[in-house]
Length: 115
Length: 114
Image (spheres, rainbow over the protein chains, first blue to last red):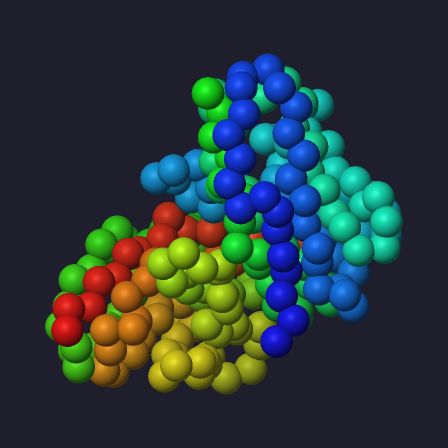
């Protein structure tokens, strides 16, 4: 079964540093997403991406965050000037169409620890 | 804003026991409903989904869920659990009129004792 893959699985970074989390969505999917889960809290939506642009973003997704599809296969989340509260599991996901009628497939997550 | 509630944070039960996990959402319009499972060290996997039609949906691994619109609920059930069902279970809702995002419940950790 095709999978969404994410790298790195775990990254430790110093506060103030920039981090790039990488994802390879399922190849025929057109919608891409980032979610995060802070330890002990709910999985939260960050952003959705379609047709090479952000289609929706949450209030969490401020100027500190950006997403990019640099080539035909990768989808990245950049976090500039990381803060302690950015420590979380970040999930990439993709779907063939929007979630209204389509299944969203999740990757295994990238665990970010900011120290 | 819409919210999703899973009332049980932790459930411990023995093999062969029946499982029911509650999920309620707060939105009066048309929704798509999902249950995801996360086994230890693995990614979120779709157990089942409801888009329309028969409100009783069957998923993988013997799970089923019933959408009761009047109660804003989408409870997950399995008649007889196995040790391998030990995992965290997440209910999620997509509001059709509100775009592409899923709103998740807080998750329920299920431990099945052998």
